[in-house]
Image 1 (cartoon, rainbow, N blue to C red):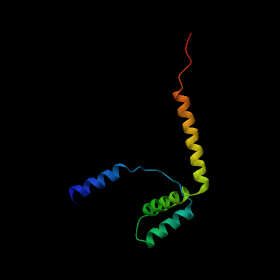
Image 2 (spheres, rainbow, N blue to C red):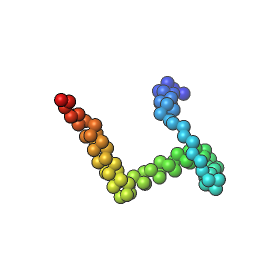
Image 3 (cartoon, helix red, strand yellow):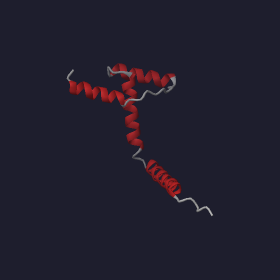
Length: 89
């Protein structure tokens, strides 16, 4: 493995976070079946599935509306935090 490729692989590994998720047995069996058919790992199937799910989810009107509301609330919190405290007499 070249140094450039090794460095890229190491950087990608450093950005990964391990999470624990519980799946119903039937869903986990389906994930393993897809992984076996595609000759990959269950983790790869789950990562790809979540990537697809999130890409589709953020395109919905419901998410876009919730996102705008979230930004408005965050801006209100920041505005409150930046307010000057009342002067002490």
